[in-house]
Image (tube, rainbow, N blue to C red; front, side, top):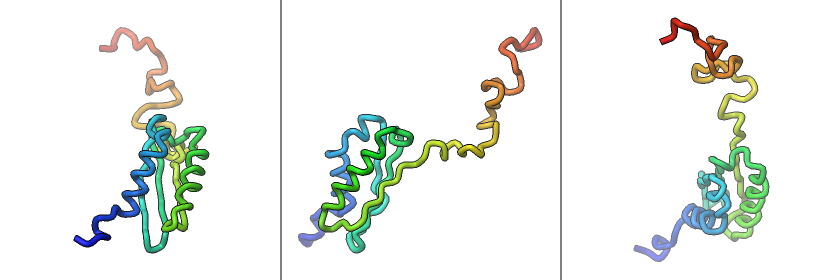
Length: 121
């Protein structure tokens, strides 16, 4: 094993840094994943999810991650992505029925009433 083989990869070092220096992500129910960490190009891509999606402080967290990692000599470009929570539900163009639940009837399907009547099992 050469000395360089024993050194942790850029990906591993970024992942460790996120866990150690950004505990707010996990404290708020969020997740982080290093999607790319290329030491040749200096590009790092991180994706935040879970509680970060739609969180009001995710912009601050994103800015702090970018500001710190761009000070690392081997990193030239940092991209932090936070998915828009509306996209996971299909956004504003989503059909009225999601997973068989009719949103127009308060989730009651076509019953339209909380009193199903005598024929209901």
